[in-house]
Image 1 (spheres, rainbow, N blue to C red):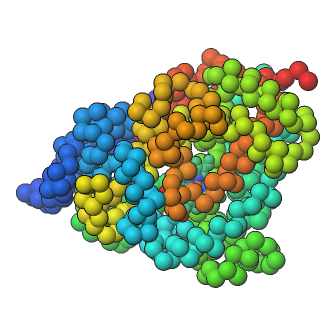
Image 2 (cartoon, helix red, strand yellow):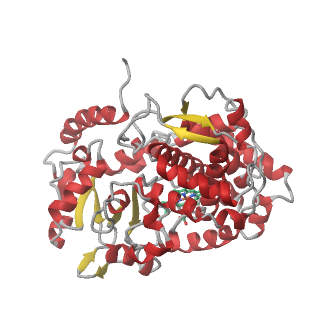
Image 3 (cartoon, helix red, strand yellow):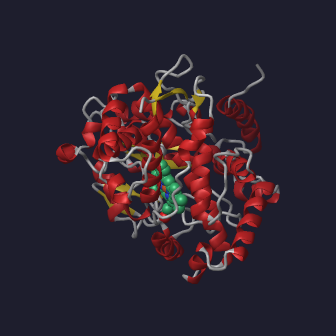
Length: 472
Ligand code: HEM
């Protein structure tokens, strides 16, 4: 049908690249020399191939690959993304040390994933060490709950609800409105106008080009080469659009949010990087999490009924509600937590080791990338009873003592966790309440059951559901 999936095209290109690289760097030394790293440390793992490491073995189903490695090598093993060694850690004690205890000493930073002189270079998710501490501390107080919108249900009333809806097309514009209003202080209207340029450009921006990251790890001076070739992770026109927008807004809203951030000591480029970074960090994750949540409710009607009862008996139908009232809905909180366990929006986390350290008998050399297989931990029977069952009650107050806090991390862990977490939770809860006050969700013929993911952890086809109007 003319469609080549991203993974198939990666596989095709790799099968072209490997012979080419072999002829460019004969003797395979360049392609294999880092592979001794784990052997020297006594850490086992699957055998890597020259240049590409274990990328091909990971295939389209990274979760299954991780699970096989856990079963075969125990809860610490080594893999290679290209030539980049990656220490996989699925042991809660080690997770705690890396993400929390030793965050400032050895594991302050993530791996480099954007160009050093690019538009996102000063983003809080990217910057390192002291610069990160400074930017993070000026951003933390910015996440208030004051900018939420109330016009969500209007959109639904105008849609043809006899037909199943592509859930992402429905929630993504909403997420954009909220994220744009908080990050840029701009009121977009993507809900009622999905062709709003902000919405169109944001969707383009979240379609990251992963190639530069892969190429950098495979060939010598890969980073330099990409720079010379002016290879871009994000399209230039896209970057320019957001930069112009943010600059215009900053000029217009002299007394607005961006100016307040600037007063706390951020440079112009730093302010622009944060605003742009929030679109990328917030828009995609909120949309994805909401899609999964709606899917989980539709496929678990009992949980949906219990939640509707809680909402109906505590909140006035379609009236306004306070932050406290929303936070008081315990079952809603449990459903959200369970949904994020079931389908973790961020399947893996990483930290770069900046100083050699020994933790619980494992030596982690400087420069090693440590990765936490979040989705694997969220489904690990060592920490969850019947993990394959959607059961919100496991997050109830009564069951709190059974939870292992280092086996659950939808927003990451420790000082470098998600800065937008409280805000994102609030937005998602508000959306779910508004929606379930008026509608029930049902699966339809086109709903993919069970869910299946592609190599980017996205559903292999759009999530389609029916929205059935509730009797008032
Ligand atoms: C459901 C929604 C969201 C999810 C699941 C999510 C998840 C995450 C995760 C897993 C991390 C990495 C944490 C770590 O490495 O320990 C992260 C970091 C981050 N998130 Fe979120 N996020 C969400 C929404 C948002 C929103 C709405 C914003 C901003 C408006 C945001 C801004 C950030 C930033 C700036 C970072 C980097 C923080 C740092 O490096 O200091 N996120 N997020």
